[in-house]
Length: 105
Image (cartoon, rainbow, N blue to C red; front, top):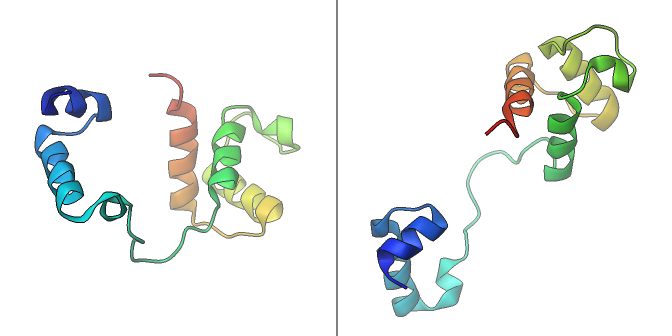
């Protein structure tokens, strides 16, 4: 496969593919593994986040809440009760937006 074909396959630039190949040739497969990223760990696990993104696609009544539309404060409260985790209203607003737009593409 050419660099161009690989770039399309991985949805990366050709330059990135060339760098990966160079790293692989110099240091082997282990060098291509993702390294731990700095910063605070996420508050929600991947499974919890997926549940939140699925939940915001349906009206709040389906999970025992009042109202026709999810609001950031409502989602924050639901996440706290469901998972015991506190998120900011800004984070919850982003999750609502992401959950609603997921699958529309």
